[in-house]
Image 1 (spheres, chains in turn cyan, orange):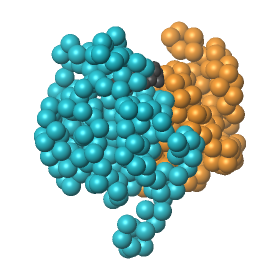
Image 2 (cartoon, rainbow over the protein chains, first blue to last red):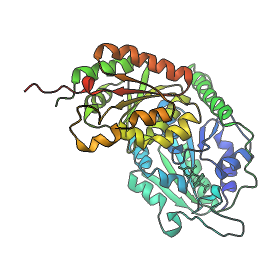
Image 3 (cartoon, each protein chain N blue to C red):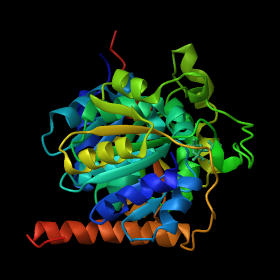
Length: 205
Length: 173
Ligand SMILES: Cc1ncc(C[n+]2csc(CCOP(=O)(O)OP(=O)(O)O)c2C)c(N)n1
């Protein structure tokens, strides 16, 4: 399963969501499908994408929040899964692309050579860890149809959902993101607050 | 417990007056009353953390969504949060109100607290973070308000060290 195909499958549904991605490959591929002001690419702080998502979800309970994470990043903040589970925001969907490597630092090189695998390559099961952390709806998917169904269920549903998707350790076609980090940050905050103001006045978003 | 309930309330009221709606915390002894006050307040969102660095992410998300926040931690929790502060808050210009208990300084009895106390200020300075200290109840309200104002205008973390004289009441024996 390819990450870009997964992203393509859910892209149309992300229009009204607050979307937070990790750095590198995931961010670049989402960007390549078409940037939107409601997409925030967390370019550096490994592990904190889910915490940023939790902060948004608790602050704007009416807004659907989608965190697009990676195995290496999740492993760096496993405690954060327990915090997510504990507050279980009904408006948060946690998608984890598990490629079993630290891809964006070149951990997966062309030709399939993997020089920095994560522990998910030797059996650590992030969906099981998420369930163990207390996230009831957490599942592992390997096929595109299953990913699409689970992710869309989460987006339409009313319960904290975690979908761990096993994907190929493939570099994106390009790492280009032609939005400066600060530009992205201010644009994103403005988008969230504008969306909030519209909801508050009863308008449609 | 000789943690000052009275002065904890003074600090809590100051946070509220500064417009804080969400508090994240990983406590130590000195923070017991502050966490309880946040927990008992229906208008405050309290997030109990597994590790202090998460609080940097949560406050970032809340800031994007338009909410003011405060982070409660001890100085070792601050040390635990450094990468989040550098790689997220400083890099992305995120305002944070860091309320850090100032353990390991003059009067410290717990041997395990004494190491971090020696360089909490130096680490804050190395990060170029503006800091101040809260030692007397009468200075709390003003300093918290000013720290929040500076955090919001500079879009940067600002630290307030909660001192022993404020947080701890020596039992009279
Ligand atoms: C604390 C820290 N250590 C190392 C890095 C370098 N780094 C940037 S991206 C990355 C890999 C992220 O892996 P993962 O979350 O699995 O996403 P992938 O790149 O595989 O899509 C690493 C290690 C970093 N940004 N921060």
